[in-house]
Length: 151
Image 1 (cartoon, rainbow, N blue to C red):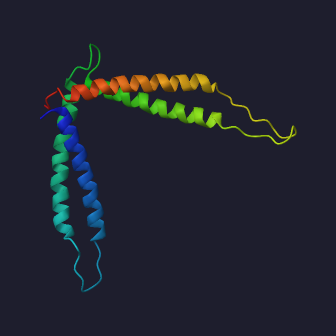
Image 2: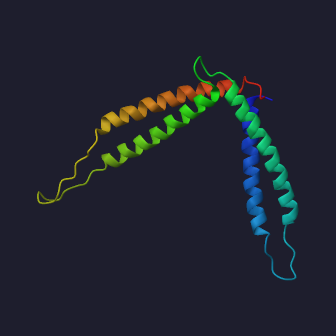
Image 3: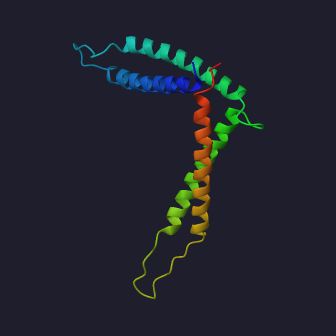
């Protein structure tokens, strides 16, 4: 199994577990004399099996990510953390640039003038650079995922 296939399977199991949790919740209580639409105990058993499978799969994914070299200095796990941090920083800076760009109209000279405390253009350039770095890194990671065998 390739790493990318394991990642797809992990996502499928996570979605399936979320669906099971919702279905279990809907069938936990019924009116006296009625039957639940689905057996919550059977769904709980299925959820238990899925969680065991998901745990084993995540452990194998993590083991693979920690053992595969991304480049000369980083493992794939290191690169994933770096990529995610670039994305988080990009989101923060993007929000700052957006909020600093909001204009407050003044209707007379007596109203207080609101000024931005940051250089929006410089921040937007950082956002663009981080977006580019994220895309390049993500593309390499995605390509590696389809060539790496899961441990």
